[in-house]
Length: 99
Picture 1 (cartoon, rainbow, N blue to C red):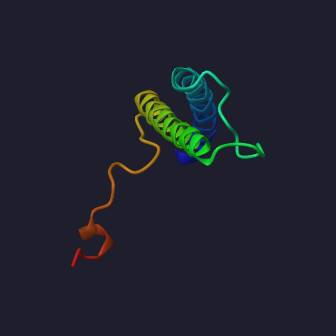
Picture 2 (cartoon, rainbow, N blue to C red):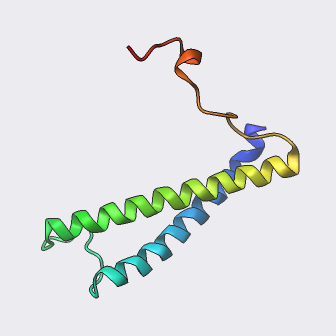
């Protein structure tokens, strides 16, 4: 089923990225009235750049993760098969220990 989910996952990833970009634009406009700094800008304050990148990265990760999980849930609803692992591995399953 993983192969069947691949195109769905790609589209979901692109959609999540677009959503994150829109959310970042809205959030940044509340933080600062100037355009967000980019790494390729020569004259940029490292504090502003760090803040912009941290906000953008966090929003991108959350949006993509939620969209991906939603796409997998919809795929499972339609096909009856979850495209991925059912749950995270525990230490017992990995054969390791915490001490």
